Length: 159
Image 1 (cartoon, rainbow, N blue to C red):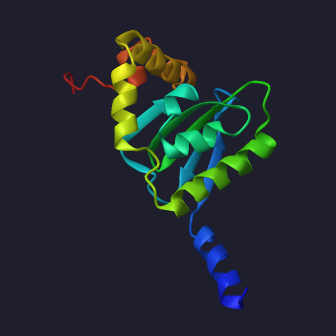
Image 2 (image 1 turned 180 degrees about the horizontal axis):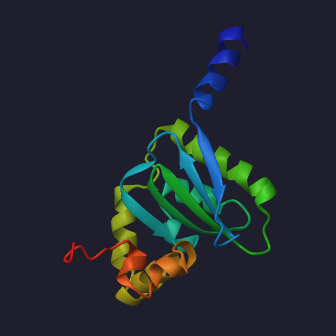
């Protein structure tokens, strides 16, 4: 192997920055922010391994032991892990899977897989997936304010 080859690959890989941020609300959730776009077509949630079938990045991530669900949106991947799994080794493996996917040049989510998956979901399944994300990701005090001022609304009519 020449020196040029041994230098080129790491430089390409290093240009893909990934920052992991554990959720304060849910210790089983971690958000990975990537310096490149993964899927510009809007967010897509894979609630299980079967839902990820046909989607290259989803399949890669579910191949890792302990991954329970995956949300891919633009340049962010949010992973929900099984409670028994540990983030210590999983975070690095997720980063490697994301980098590998980007280096292939193949879209992270294939259009055909997206349409097939959404057509198979019932309204109840979609509602349950959205509710799960809201419950897990949204601060309850923001989600259920007791007054409009807690949302940041002010009444300026009397001013």
